[in-house]
Length: 67
Image 1 (cartoon, rainbow, N blue to C red):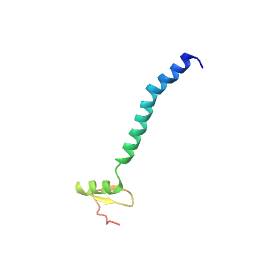
Image 2: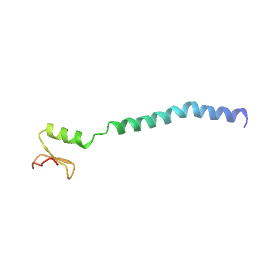
Image 3: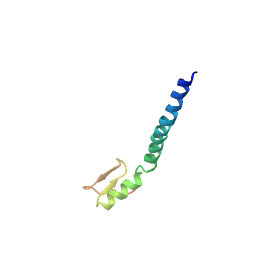
Image 4: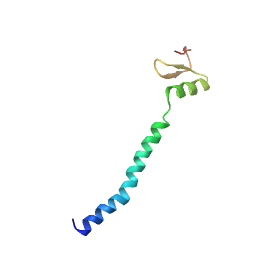
């Protein structure tokens, strides 16, 4: 491996590694803040709806009982 090949590898590490780390960190943060079913049900109830747990959707016409 000559000098220029080593330099090319170092440039990839210097510029590529932060991009890869940033991408992975973004995925982890999005997974942590993804709304859970409890959060979706709470948001539905706050808007005046009834949460259908069987179909995982907010229903404004029919009342559904909690499981």
